[in-house]
Amino acid sequence: MSWSAITLVAGLVAAVPQSPPARKPIDVSKLGPQVGERVPDFSLKDQNGKSWTLQSILGPKGAMLVFFRSADW
Amino acid sequence: MELQDRVAEIRKHGLGLAAISYDSPETLAAFSRQRGIDFPLLADVGSETIKRYGILNTVATEAVGPNATDPIVAADVKTLVSGVGANARMVGMAFPGTFILDRNGRVTSRFFEEYYVERHTASSIMARVGVEGEAVAGTQVSTDHLQIKTYPSDRAVAPGNRFAIVFDITPRPRVHVYAPGATTYRVIAVNLTPQPFVRVLPITYPASQIYFFKPLNERVPVYEKPFVLVQEVILEGQPEAQAALRGKDSLTLTGTLDYQACDDKICFNPTSVPLTWTLSVRPILRERPPGPQ
Image (cartoon, rainbow over all chains, first blue to last red; front, side):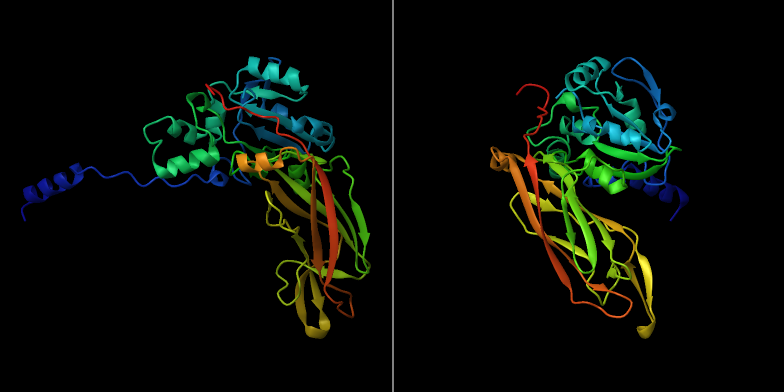
């Protein structure tokens, strides 16, 4: 096979759209920082307008950091 | 908010406490006033922190997009977003869960909800990580082998709560009981009598000690020092469960603590200790899905 023929075939193969991989069910236990990993820092205002960073939340033994869906509904 | 009831104990233990959501500071201010919250509720408007933590609820986004009818997406919407239909206002929220961090910000344990209706109570998380909570009335039992103190993590539970039955166990002098991995002996276990809408989860066992029994030259995992077992239970929260539990103001669980004990000379017959726990049932402080009803 000539090089130009190979290039043409390669080009055609590359142009065929691939179907996206099937979506797998979400496993929340795999999302976000895992045991042993350091969580990302943040700088957020609280309900009284006071700013907090991760460092400012941490106590002598660490912290309980809770993510909840919404306070509004 | 049940977490507010636990604030003093959490702080006493030396843990900081904060909660994060995608709500505005105004929403959090109103909620905080209403519920008397005195720990930080952090406003992650725009969900930038939630995204950086990798816990953005992407299923909520899919639920209002072109893939909403994909069966796998639809199944995830039911368990991770809403059983009554998602809407655009939910886009940007986090998957709910709790990180326990050490003082360097490293995760030591995490509790993320696999079904949005079912949530760990703060007390059950505290029981899992060994933070002492307010004493809940329990039962003390002494057998020939063990001193047992057992109590529920929460006095009152609502449908959807994942709570714990805690066992503080002290083996009598020179006595040990068998821990997971002790294959030829009966490992200590909790057996709860099944009842509708009460789901029993695998028990959490603490680290054990190795016992060397010279006559048989065997090394076996045992508990010979005081230890704590945490048996988590879910009071189901889906609509059928809520309907069935409406009007019910208490929940009684029955079961047994089963074990085999030996001392340094002999092994005793397996023992089964019958136990009962009664909790109040309270209604859910309902979160309505946002948007038109």
